[in-house]
Image (tube, rainbow, N blue to C red; front, side):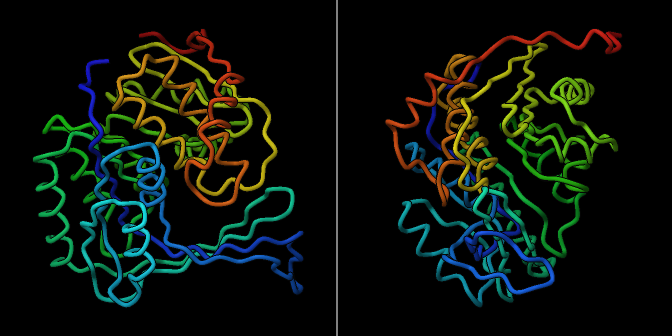
Length: 324
């Protein structure tokens, strides 16, 4: 670890959402499904990361694009969790996404497109981002892109931050992930589904995920983390593979579990934790997330208990990989 200990971080959510979450016994496709509990709250991957980081004790600044027509729940959240709001407010309304959580923990997402961002609004965001880069070293860029922002523009921001020596943790998918990987983010965290999409084939085992992730190390990415649900988390850093296996959890909801993992990885690096401890901490934090509804650190005692049950082992590169 070469990082200096810090608690300052910027999270970037280019396409936030108001999440309308409904809990129900099961979805009846093509018929009427009765929601038993519902909640509307400010969300988006970077916003979720910010909440967890704030719970952990980080000094968080949030930025991205936020619709002028309905910012109230975001403003309230940012006030409640005591983060600095540097979002660029744009014309229109922030989208509403629907998440249906069934009794067995399965989540169905219905995601809507975001606001359409103009060139002038993008310029305002860029000014904000690189002003923040003058006083921050850690940046978490997470989630999808709104209309008006191309994958190439997003990659250019990552590349510029990289050239300035900033540590960019990048968590996205599809075209944004493809372009962003070539921009030298400091850390990426695809899940097994996103990694499958990237390589163009279904990856069904940890060994297949490891082999696919190994090929990304040639892109100059210092940290490659693959989340695999109940199969745990793998991390490639400087040629060394580690794998963390959490205990089996009673899954209530997987919403925000990946974002919680990113927050844990970021905080662990910011606090210069030893590598094994860092991966154990981040994996346990994510495992805690699936046992609850909502995002955030709800029980330090339970987190410590899960950490004690999380096993970290060293892996070896797949011998079938080309070493040249």
